[in-house]
Amino acid sequence: VEWLVADGHIISDEDAKAKKPVAIVRGPVRKILIAERTALNVMSRASGIATAAREMAEIKAAHNWHGEVAATRKTTPGFAIVEKYAV
Image 1: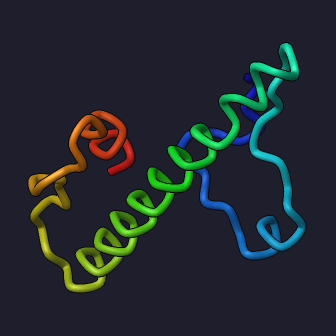
Image 2: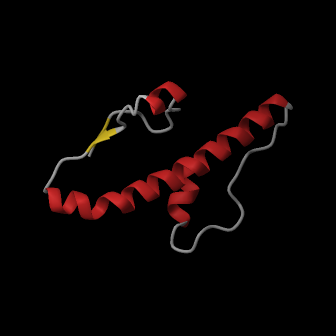
């Protein structure tokens, strides 16, 4: 996998509408197709969590709150590492 955007990069509406790629995947076609749906689901889940965390951080900054936005609540079983990393 060759990542075309940096970790934490915010994808603009224009990039999304243009379907700008975020990565290039190389390898045997069969193996790529087998893993594709799982990879897309993981990226989608992590992206949603990262977006929500960013929105909370923006609210925090707008109100001059000096605390931290942290992931302290429940996580999906078996998925905690991905969800915590997304925050």
